[in-house]
Amino acid sequence: MQDILGVFTDSGNTTMTLILLIIACLRVYLEVVGFNFEKLPLTCSLNNRMGNDYGKKLHRYGLFFSIGYIILFAPTFLLS
Image (cartoon, rainbow, N blue to C red; front, side):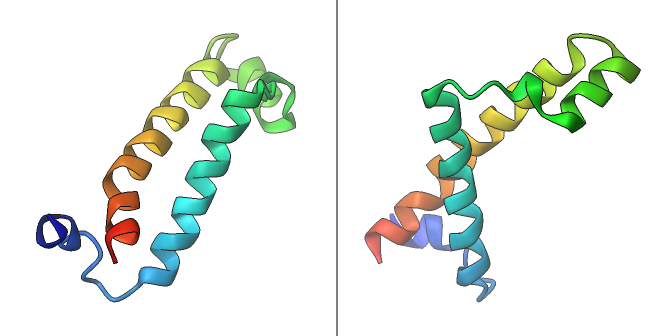
């Protein structure tokens, strides 16, 4: 199993992968705690320019990418 998942981290940049994994975990944590992403300044400006639901969709896709990143890369660090 480590050989299958090791393909993603064979680039030799495990420090960057670990940093991005921590950021993804922080993103999921903020979602669990109930942080309101709609109040962020960048989200407010995006909502004004693109429509009211654009910021919500953007943060939802960010959550999906964070969960996917955790699923793909966390086992590599836990097994090593």
